[in-house]
Length: 465
Image (cartoon, rainbow, N blue to C red; front, side):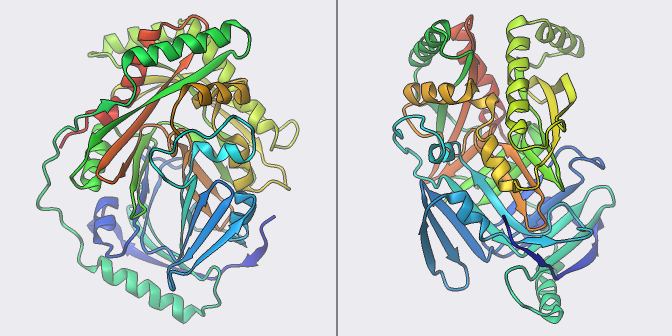
């Protein structure tokens, strides 16, 4: 368990009429900046955007090796062991009677798909093409909060992990405020040409993998498995300009831009991986996809077609059951509740079938442990989950990395909110990497499944500005 401590923090309110989340991000002068935001703008979801820079601590995990880097000294401490147990020693759980915002400081970053290899035997680790950590979290004590409902900006500075007095905290608030004094006004917008992506797997190779997956289903090993492919493009522009194009063309519940310095992770995910607020835990399975229609009438027709598709409906119900089972391992008995079931959500290019499952987290399970127990989501692996991942390991030739893991925050106030890492791009070494998958069942058509991966990646493949 995390240790509990009292928390000292200072909040400074600014008039928000001069700012946007974008201008706040661009006004910050520091390094390793992040922006978390949402297309949803209401009381329950998407009310706040979070911006920050200059983490004081960084944590990278490679297998069972955990590296901790202090920003003040660049000193690297290395530990071997269970990565989640080690990370939890870095995150004191502060006692906040009334946390002012869902996120008041803590860890920002991702847990990749391959974290599961530390806890389950899914096969020999394949080639690591992207050479990125399995987990990469950066810890921030200064956060800027943009309240979309009240249209106000707040600077939050905490003294987590230190013994600073309030005067020191006030001084840090002034430092952040000074950076925001000259609001960044974007008078020149960089032209953004559409990237030219190529698949790492040929169409024929992907379709052959679908056939092999179907063979495993017909032999009774699994009910469903998600097979993915990676697409790459040369990238020489500004990743944040690309992100701005993405947020305009494909607004989504989870929008994120995180500059790790060695690479950038950005995305527009429609799906929550896991959310913990207090003792309430929520997950949102998404399965069942159609391309959007060209007219409202065509949209309605496609929606009806999707909800009457026996394959899609069976796949969705199975993944809802898998989500309930995942929460059942970490929630109080009898607390699991299906709060949304078989609803349609529409995005720029596709529509999805969406459900929502909630429960009450057990007292002896931390939010980070809960997230790890649920990774990867059934919607990006399959069912039964372990055997599906073993088959993925046989069919996919490289580590998935960030794709199908989770991106978000773990707060020192105990809150956690991570999106499923889909519709996500990694920009590293001048290459943009996008990955998308399709859920394979017994009667899947290989060509249709190939096209589904392209439709899911379309929001990133067609960004222009």
